[in-house]
Image (cartoon, rainbow, N blue to C red; front, top):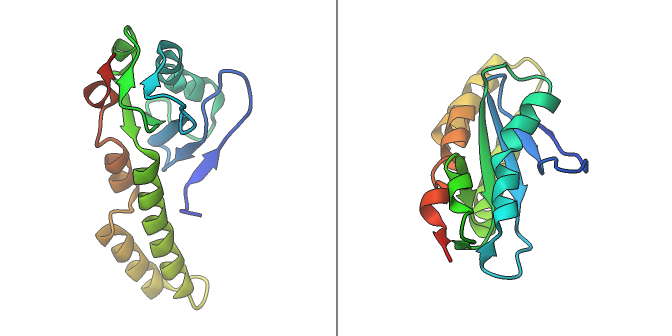
Length: 158
């Protein structure tokens, strides 16, 4: 819906959804929204830590040196002892912040798409690109949004 190529699989040890934002950027998510306590386990920290390796070995369509951004989607604020060290290259977002961003992004994309009158309209394309840029929905802006909070800085060991 946002215009990114995406994927998901139920294979064991596979990440949750991933988005390809061009050949040089991939965002891979670990869904931990169903947490029943306020604690991220060491196992879950290790799981998200390895998602870039899985993407490199299993996802086609990205460059060999593509930036792979690992994002933990969770409401928790603590991590079990020994888990923090696995989160240095992992980013974090709360489910509510993700829903708020997605709702805004989808609204903008729907509004832009409604203005398309015919295929190949270069004027529409220029206006659409300007709107996406102004609303921070370019691939680089989306990357930066998801890299705003490092899990190792947000979560506290408990």
